[in-house]
Image (cartoon, rainbow, N blue to C red; front, side, top):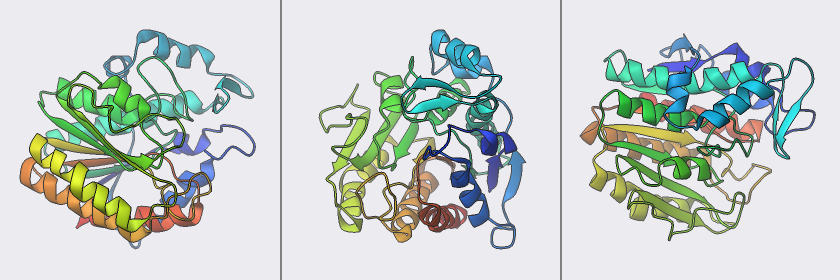
Length: 304
């Protein structure tokens, strides 16, 4: 199994006191230490190309991210989303990590990958960076997989916030299944059950206070059966760990064991339909303790 990351992802700085801080990725990399996870093949993420980005994003968004990259200080794209001098490089490496993982899996060099990257991506729509996100890393990777010849790509998103950007990009693309569990009501206010796209969108919102039982029921009753019906050739995971009970930005009560469980279920589906191919990319998660526990459980299940 491959682990993709890059030092630039640690250098991205959204500003003092911002929850999307380098400490998040530092906690993830500490959890995946070389002793416990010695079997991981650690790869430096390449930059995404403009061609790869343009499969998921309008040219205006790409130009905006490039043009607003500051030489000093910070530039705010919206009240929540900021860039520092290292942010453009980090965003290119984050999207490039998922594309590189797609290539590795389709070329037979690996069957699983985890992309330990930031900034996250799933709120970035086709034309708007938002919600801490610049480029939509998983969407760029899914579009790259379609360009490589796959016909059915599934994205499962268990971040506590709905991936409105991913849903927007693939709203009318039947070749991509997007399935999400998320807290509702909560930012960004999307993800109702009635939002179904071209029949390829599955939203399973969870009420504040929901925990393991509600999460596993939603996955088992709604998300996993949709994946089986879809028969994906590749499973991508928007792996946000902010539904954990310790996370300060939301109100769900998951445990690390829940992430291990759902990862095992996704691996089983990938084994049946997708030649074992699963790529996971880090999204949210704002408690370092929860990140360490949850990422370790998630990656161990990916490696099983």
